[in-house]
Image 1: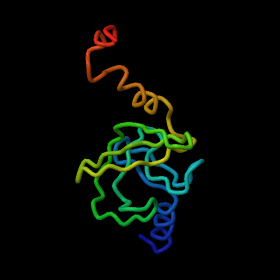
Image 2: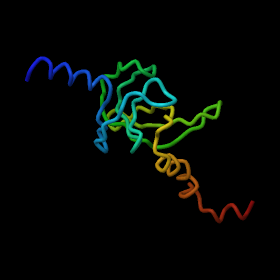
Image 3: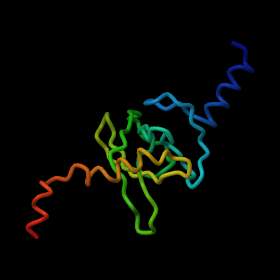
Image 4: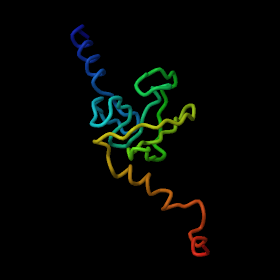
Length: 124
């Protein structure tokens, strides 16, 4: 492989990453966030940040499963990821190009499968 090929491959890596879950090539630039670290298609991530978004200081590197969504105080949505390697939980802001279908599936999951029988609501 020539030096030019290795430089162009490194340059491509700096601009994108391949999703470990669905294998989509994902651009690092995303509307609404400065530190994209999840796939806009399947919403899976990789455990790359340790404490601060964008620090890329985690040694884990395992896949992070999207398990829920949360709404921050300003109304912004965040995806809650759980690391399949170490179990860490992280919240990542959604991006403008995230697939709305898996976001909505996670949002309605507690309503679709409540932790108690719905018949109990009639008693109140």
